[in-house]
Each structure stands twice: as C-alpha cells, then as structure tokens.
Image (cartoon, rainbow, N blue to C red; front, side, top):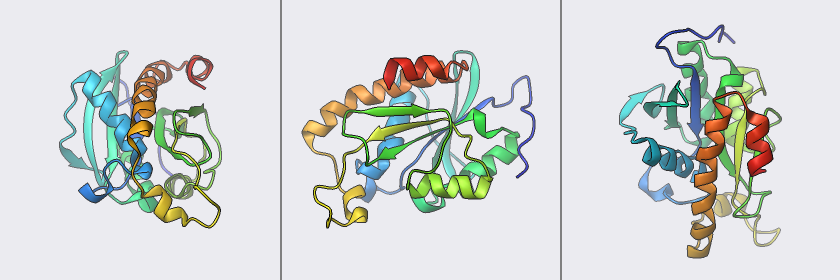
Length: 198
C-alpha cells in the first residue's frame, strides 16, 4: 500500500476509527460498540461528526495536542477497510497511527483489551482492514460484547442483537475508559494504556 511519512504542521497525525454498521436499525447493537465509543469521545471533546468523507462520517479534534481524524465507516462492517485505507492514503498515515475500536465476542461485557498490533481475531471488519492495507500493525481497542449464549446461536444474529439495560451500565464505564486510553495512545504511550485498562 501507499501510506508514507506523516505530514507535519496542521495535517492529521492520527486516525481513530470506530467500527460498526450505519443506519438506525443497527444502533446499540453489539457490532456497533466501536461507534458508541467514538460517540463518547465526541461528547467529551465537543466534536460534531457531520462531514462525509472517505466513505465515512467524520469529524476532527485535537487530543493531547495531536490532530485526529475521527471516522465511522459507512461501508458496513465487512468492507471497513475501504474507508480506512482511503483515509490513510490521503493523509499518508502509517498503520501504527491508526487506532481501531471494535467489538469482541471473546471478551465479557464490561471488559476491554488494548493491543499494539495483531491478527483480525475472526472479526470481519478488522479482517478487511488488514487485507486491504496489507498490514496488521494497527493499535486497537477491543470492547467486550459477550459470547454467544449457546454454541448453536447464529453469530450474525448475536452481533446484531442489542445490549440489555444491565449491559449498558457496564459499557458506560468502558466507553469512558476507551476515551482515557485513546489519550495515552495518541501520546505514544500505549503501554500505559494497556497497564491501566487491560
């Protein structure tokens, strides 16, 4: 892929991507945990995500002095890489400066995991991002959405199901922790983010 060296000055230094599916019918589903975390970041920083660019709804803000592009891809989950790679190429941002937030069915609700890089872990959005970019060097925040209630439960039905009220209470703290973790991560201190929130 192209990417290249980051531009200096007023250009975007980090891209923060929340993964999910666009449309009201997908709001507050397990697969949209990444969107929800990005919403919490926008609340704290007073960001309006109202521009359509890079096949995404986008906004911009400064976090710890770093100019960040916030993205919610509108490609639907399985094609998330189309949006992410387009933005990376436009701003010449390396994967190490692209932070991906997404749901993880292997983690219980109320848990999160930060990783510096790694495989897609069976997540279709990450799978597409890694495939189209040719890199797995993306820092990521994985938000636990719980495993299927029983082995025969259809995975698609599970990730497109909605959170319960008790789940929402647990996730409320997790979304705040995601924002705090992102503040460490854009300063290049992912180890501190991992130590505090994993």
